[in-house]
Image (cartoon, rainbow, N blue to C red; front, side):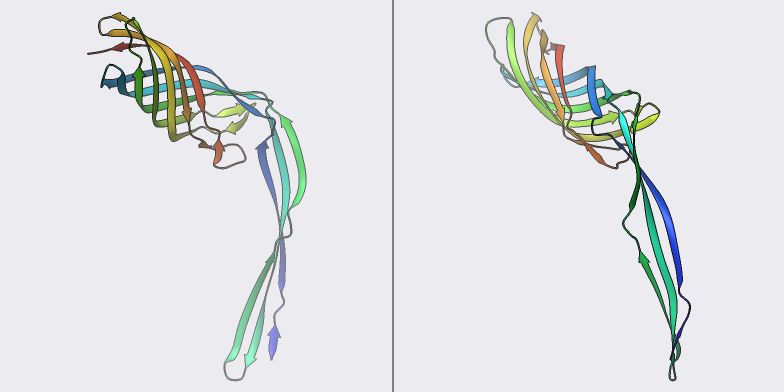
Length: 233
């Protein structure tokens, strides 16, 4: 014999809102400055290596900042009840059941909101291992090329558009490399002025952007004109 208890039915409604950046919003990297200090060893007149500690700072701004607010309703339907079986040998056995059904989410609205452009700073702290080749000649001007690799710490300030935080502040570490080309000018014995161009680049990094988690930011590339003094001892 079966004894059925009344089933219960419950329906819950949840409204989910997701905020994302509009596709035409562009992050612009502005100008900045850098400082570095290095300690190295000259293996031969043509080859030198060093360990460099570098710092770069630049600005980040937004073009066409717009956010998209997507509102969605999610309904959850739950039914539960009990079935009792009467057995002459074992007595009453209760069987309970619960079923749950979640229909497809129903979009409610999508709105596009223009925001005031904002800006923030991005900083890089790098430890680089470099090698250089010098084209030694009889003049006071010695051209050189160089390359290096190392580890970079990437620090990003909170980026606002209006009063809305578009990208939250974060710090992350990533691989970095650089290429250098320039010329050394002998000033006095053991002291030279080096001028040249440096291209410093990093691997991709994870960012915390509004409406997303663990987004991947594009690789960073910094081109700079360098001037330094090299003292030999």
